[in-house]
Image (cartoon, rainbow, N blue to C red; front, side):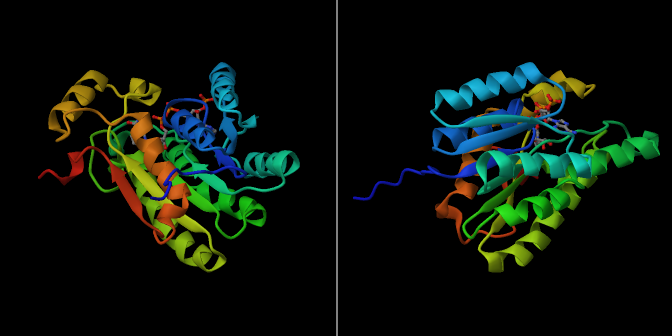
Length: 254
Ligand SMILES: NC(=O)c1ccc[n+]([C@@H]2O[C@H](COP(=O)([O-])OP(=O)(O)OC[C@H]3O[C@@H](n4cnc5c(N)ncnc54)[C@H](OP(=O)(O)O)[C@@H]3O)[C@@H](O)[C@H]2O)c1
């Protein structure tokens, strides 16, 4: 019998938006598997501190980096800090997201660029700056949502940004596969995080999602983190450029 435990001992991970919600669950999961984890946040230092505590509890090294992933110079400085602290990067999780929830016809130029820059625009500079620190066997995972392929009221900007993100995943995958780096995405159904507070119809959304989901429950941050962990492990080494959906079967229903 073989021991199939996933071990990321000796690996270094960066999780953007790792301070809260899904990003926190991924950060803690990677630490549980033995990785040292740098988390990025923008505004809420207290949430970042709590995630640092949870990572440290696992015996892993933890670092919080304040940076706006919508700004190239912030991304560059964040990667420089990782280089100074850890000297390398094995796992890059592009999870931070923002966006304006409005009908498409009410989106201003600023709303559109804000959403596209943070959600779709980040992964390219993030990968470009991080690549010199990444060796063969490294993994990149982006966090996407069902809005990339489905039309959801008020979700035009975020949905379009996630579609661009998933396309970029495929293009990065073919460029980085020869270097032994895999690039994939995990796409989640509705997850009850702080992000949902900004939906005008939050309660309705949660109720409807739960009712429609074949497994009879909402997707949790931990469900998403489990798939992210798998995509960072050697068990997924032949998976390249894919978006894995974690939604309890929600999206397969007609
Ligand atoms: N919740 C859902 O239903 C759902 C479903 C599918 C996919 N997703 C995706 O899952 C990911 C995480 O979502 P979530 O629901 O966990 O969100 P969340 O609870 O709102 O957390 C967002 C995280 O991103 C950080 N962040 C936001 N803007 C940033 C910026 N410009 N630069 C750096 N960090 C920034 C936040 O840091 P601060 O707190 O410091 O601002 C926080 O750590 C996103 O990619 C989202 O699209 C969510």
